[in-house]
Each structure stands twice: as C-alpha cells, then as structure tokens.
Length: 557
Ligand code: NOJ
Image 1: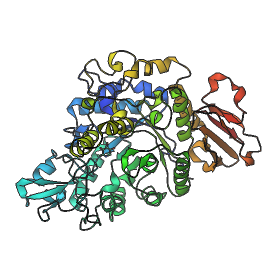
Image 2 (image 1 turned 180 degrees about the vertical axis):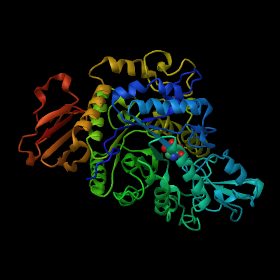
Image 3 (image 1 turned 90 degrees about the horizontal axis):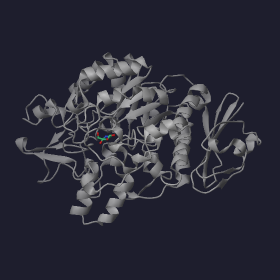
C-alpha cells in the first residue's frame, strides 16, 4: 500500500468559537488557539483542522461565509492567522482549513449582487427559480427544518438553501462559480496551508430539473436529489486537476448519505478526487425511522457490521477517516460509553476502538479529556438546528416538549460546542468574560489541568495511542478483520501486516465480558501494547474476561 503522510497522521479538530478566548469577549479566537499549541504538540497530533474562521454573520457559527478571504473580526486578523500557521509549522504540525462552498452566506457580495436583479452577472452564481402555483419550486425541506426555498420579493423568485435561509446554495453548474472557488483555494494554498476539510461536498450537484420527491407530500426530505448528484465526481475531478494535484496536501470531504461504493470513487486510490471522506453511517446507527432526533440505543451488532463494511470495503480501494466526535455530534462518551461511573474507562475504550482501525483518526477538542454532553435550559441553546427543530416540533407541531428536550440533550450539536474545559476556575479557564455558550458545570472535575496532573488520565492514554500509531506500521497499514463476531459485549478485530498481527479487544458494556481467544492466535495473543486498566496491575493481561469497558491491544510477531 502506498505510504502517505496523511495516512500516518492524527488530526485534531478545533472549533474556534469554543476553544480559547484571549481577549475576554466570551468568544474563542486565533490568539487563544496560538496560546495552546504546546498543549496540542504534547498530545502528539500532527494536523489541526480548523473549523471556519472566515468573515461570517454567524447564522451557523461560521459555516455561512460572507468573505472567503478574510478572518472573522471576533477571531482576529489575517496577521493572527499567519502567526497560527507559523506556530503550527514551527512545531512540525500542519493546518487543514474548512472549505464551505456548497453555500455561502446571504451576506456574501456574490449573493447581494445575485439577488439584486434577474440580469445581474452574479444571478447564476446561485439557484433561483420561479414559484409553482404560488408555492415553492419543489417540495424539498432544509436540513435545518422548514422548506429549502426562500422567496425573494425583489425579483419575485425563490432561491435554494439546503441549510438555513442565510446559507444560499452556490450553483456549481456555473463554470464561473467553480473557477472562483478554485482561485480562492489556490490563494489559501499559496499562503502555505496543508489541506482542506470540505463541508457537505457531496451536495454540490443537484438532480437535473430539481424535481419534487415522488409521493405528493407537501414537504419532504429530498436527499436523493442532491446527495451524490449527477456531476459531483466531474466537479471534484476538475478541482483535483486544477488545484489539489498541484500541492502536497490533505483532503477530507464531508459526505452525508455516501455509501462505501460512493466512497471508493470520492476517496479512490488513484488520487483523482479526495484523500478520504467522512461517512455518516456509523453516526446514524442510534437514529430510528424518524431520523436524527428519534434516538434509539446503539446495537453493538450494527456497529460491527457498519465499521466492518467500511474497513473491508475501502481496503485496497480508498482510505477511511475515523471519528466518533465532531462539532455536529454529541459527545461520544455520553453517547456510546458511560459518562458517570465509567467515564474514564469508556472514553479510553472508545479511543482504542477507533485509533486501532485502518484510516486517519480525528480527535475533536475535549475528547482527549473525556468531555461529556450537557443539559441546558432551552433559552441557553444557541444552535440554529436545535432552535429551528424545537420551533417546528414543539411550538408549531405540538409535540411533547419533555420528549423533544430529551432528544436535544442526547443529540443536540451544542453538546459538542460548550467551551473547552481548561481548568476548574469559573468559566473553565476558557474566558474571563461571559462565554457565548454556557460552560458544562462538570468542568470542576473534568478539565485539562486535572488531566495533565494525572498520569492515568484520558489525555495520556490518547498520547500513547497516537505514539503507538507512529511506532507501528501495522496500525496504519494493516488489513482489518472482525473476530468474535457473535460476542454480544465485545467488539474485537485483528489487523495484519506481513508477519505481524494486532488483536484489539473492546468491551462496550458495563458488565464483565468473557470471551474465547480467537482460534488462529492459539492462545498466543502476544505483547500487550496498551490497556485502559494498566493502573490496576498487569496480572489481568491474559485473562479471558474483560472488565467493564476494558480495552486491550496485543501485538504478536
Ligand atoms: C456541515 C457542518 O459540519 C455543519 O456544522 C454545518 O451546519 C453544515 N455543514 C452547513 O454548512
């Protein structure tokens, strides 16, 4: 398998608004990030993915960009950004920026022009249609609730917005739009950045004719008509030819609704499109038929099936990204582990489970100290997705308020966005002012200061996981196989490379979990590389029962 630096990397995602505030305005900023680079360096990650820092009216916290080539005032200046890049590079770390080009902000100059008249030269930069029988041009709904079309009185037409109405979709069918985007990417790459994370990049090509969904529903989820659309590969191949192939860089495309089959194209080994994608399949396993907010318990069998499908499906064909957290997902330890009695054990187990797989691991800020979900009062939530959903379901739809709040506690995006917990002081050391989103009250116990003082902390465990990946090629390049398939408590798999075998055992439950050694290992599991119960003595390493949330990794040669 071809060696690549981005296969051997571990990425750390920063959500700038919530990472570190340097000037007391309650909003994280670039100087704040710079002040924490030594911390990231100590953790051992070598790539930082920075969620958007560009000019934005913040309808969706920076994912609505009004100027792609300037920095948001709250975050600092282009000079601060240069210092950040320099600070990373001088520590041998790389910077991946967020590319949000399925849509812009409605306050972008292109859109201001575009909406001004039907004859404007920017009109076709966006997707405008006349209404049909006094209704929207089709019946698609937005990801953030309500119709995906907004009527604009000025020219008596509707524009498409798959996200909020302040995030109009760019028209990728227009070659001038694609050229603008390529030029902008080149501008950043020439400044020295090392890659792009591409926001919902598989949504850029909409179905010909923008048809309504079949079945005659007034409003309906039209995902099949804009996810993985007819020209998406053509557009990405063009971007690759014009831009990506000219730099030694890393790309990851966020691709909701992409199958393994789709991923073998987006992230193909031939390198004609992207390096890897973010799949959503494992993130959807705890959603019921009603979608994201219809929360169901995760079934371990489903997780085994899903992860194995991706691991085997891309083997020799593409490359996986590995994540359980990001700024859109609830905290993994609350979701898939146990955030009370086994918080430390289960966070370490989940980290082991993920970091030993084939692919490039992503750590989201706070994951490395086991940050958890939060329960806020409705008025304290800030996320547009939560607020729109609440309005649609409770205020307009009369659904049970308590049930909807419960789903927000479990799935709301603000779970991931509460400020980073640096210490046990007021506001967790994040700001000296009033934080833009409330700090999780558990920062008194869960914080970086505490983690750095405790040699058994999740932080040091993650540091070790990262170090192991650097030391053992098998962790990066070995082939994956599921073992102990029928075990109802344990997720176990092997990796193999040349004459080496890695065995990974993870107990996903809070009960002891007995198992039989996989037969081909003949009871010779090998050297124990890492376990989350190390502090309790190593006498258990050959035991055939895993303790609650225990994880073990063995290497045999
Ligand atoms: C995906 C991003 O991760 C999310 O935060 C954002 O709201 C949407 N795309 C729209 O840009």
